[in-house]
Image (cartoon, rainbow, N blue to C red):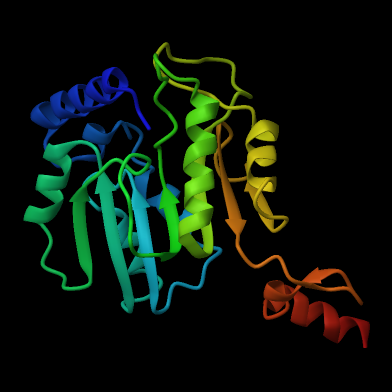
Length: 231
């Protein structure tokens, strides 16, 4: 979990942004307006129909707009440690299938499980009292334990020529190793934005030994096309 000092810094940072910018991606640190793109990339590898989704560090809950591009049939819980962001999310929520809670993912217990767990931008803030990799490891571990289908997070890459003082840029290979501790079925995508990448981890590791292909992939159009071409 966050130290009290790190948590206070995060709450203060985003509260000041919200007081200045209101309900805007700028309040969440997305100054370049790519918030929806990030969410769509996080969600694109999952079948979202009738799924229960947990959005860690949900901010205003804007990720719901991205989910609704795929399906209207879902259940959503958004959590964030910043009270004013959750208050704003609740003020704008009129959906019965959507809930928002002010919650610390690592500190709080969850009696329910989720199909899909996502988080956008939650690892971008450089912590002072804890190693960022330790924090990332704990979030990944708990997410895999609570998820029935898979998890997805985005990261700032270390493969950059400029870093801000308060941002954390992770080494992609180290993040991959953390994911591989819990699943073989992993995807890292650095093909969308040059200085950010997204990692998906899937619970279903089962594969057919006759062709060493993940069973979950066999319903994909790519696999079906390959089978047709090989006949």
